[in-house]
Image (cartoon, rainbow, N blue to C red; front, top):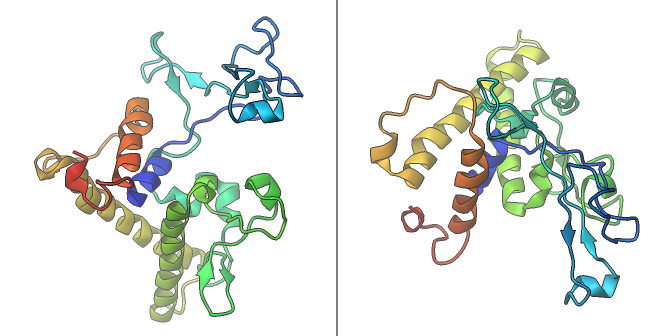
Length: 255
């Protein structure tokens, strides 16, 4: 299930205007004539069992940004994705250069980590935890990674941590074998190996478990684009089903 979640995040991230307000300042409903066309806010009944105690009558929901289809013709809208469609371990390295650079230690090809007292390495903590995560204290755990959704679920954070440690492990081995390599080459070579490992896990180990050997025997991926129906619809139930009893740990139960 964690591979399903990570694969889903790896190839798709809905892009929306996060600053757009579709509800009033006090949680009241905004009339359709005053609301932005991108708003699809949800009306909350006055007697709602939960939100009524907070006097909330509206849930802020914004449509994801859309574009034309790949042939640039009018038709059903296609959603933008804020990440690359390649299986390039962008959840570790980021999809934008600025983010990718901020995650690097700039020494020995390593990625930044935070080290615990017992010597374990985890992802660095966010510089703005209360902004990036649903926490109240600046001292709270809120990881910084190639994909901000790392903090949505502990299982996803585990996968991120695993591949972060693997990158640094490989970079250390490469440095021992090639002492003349500089930081940039060590980083890029370790990154290539980690991406290859991730692609092998996805195509050779995970996909056959989900679809069955018969359906993946002749797959030769050549197109980088990903359909919304695949990334938003097909992978989501796999992620949910594989983590719920009685299917948890039993991929044959979810086909």
